[in-house]
Length: 487
Ligand SMILES: [Ca+2]
Ligand SMILES: [Ca+2]
Image (cartoon, rainbow, N blue to C red; front, side, top):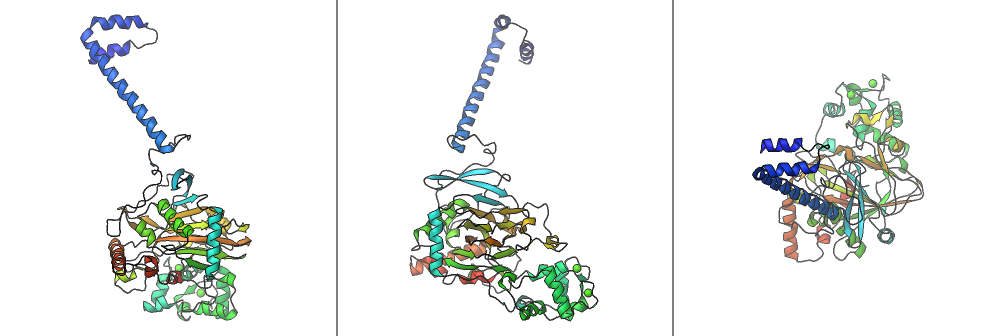
């Protein structure tokens, strides 16, 4: 057979006429026939493969669309996938949407009569944009409902007790100094002090205001712009914030300057709010129970001059960290409490006349270093001053939704570490008003705690047999606004 093939191959030269082939085939009829059979089998298999591939591409990219070269790697979802694949008691697995690459567009079925396009904006964090997620009418309904409910200031004017965490942990001044001294050179640089001051909502410190505080408090007598341990120990725990408060604070000097309210989305809620939650479930492809047990919709209004400096929507996960939503199931008391917001879905309810972009200052950066966020007095977290210097900005367009993962995967289908690249903020609104809404999907990185929490809720439901479970479960959604977490 091998010889026969070689002979055959030798005869494939273009100069040789076809009739000679036939003559040769007739000469050794047994081998030639089997050769012919093998060739025909391969030919058929090849044709079947090609047809199968064409059918696959056709059904995966929809009618009238060129086949996507990435289609093989990222299969598109079925049209309107079913919205139930795990009950409160069943095993949970968190599907994660693939970003493929920045600019990649995939089609998603979210509502019966429309196909949406979902574009990858960054991979770190995994961030997507879906234009036309909400209709103009739906946006207007949500704004009206928020107005009816009434909005309150997102941050109180002069917050007190910014240092209770350190007190609760009973840290000595030396221990606090060591925590702040990120580069461990025995001195506190401006960046190190600023980085720390952002842990909780307070007055936003800038390099300039910090120098002013040092001068006012005579905190840096040797005038080198650094705080030594000795200099640091002479300051009281919340000296900076107290100094600024005494001088008087404007809203623009706070971490955020906006008003917000919460809208319940469960049974009995306005049909637009319920439809929105259903759509978010389809969009995120998460088990519906996780979306249903998450925070209500937060609606935020930024007036002209409003902003929200860059922050993470969720806190880092330490072994002691508990989530707000599973606190009761955790059965533990700890000062480390966070919102555990696995995904943020942000909806633009109007097109803003000027400014108001959502900034992701370190999106797709090669590295993430806390200290390098403030360099040469340029603070990338400052959305009043430096929005134009970050890596990515999204313009607010009515009806568009963007969403991103605040946590990485643990590689086993559950929540991993906080994704530090998910740092984001609202740039200052220079013209008009900005209306946005947020849906946060709360998931406990501790799988067993999440499971226990869901079990508790379903037991409660069984006992009360009440149709309005979200009201029972979330009697007061405002505790969620406690941390530096609301957009
Ligand atoms: Ca230092
Ligand atoms: Ca000094």
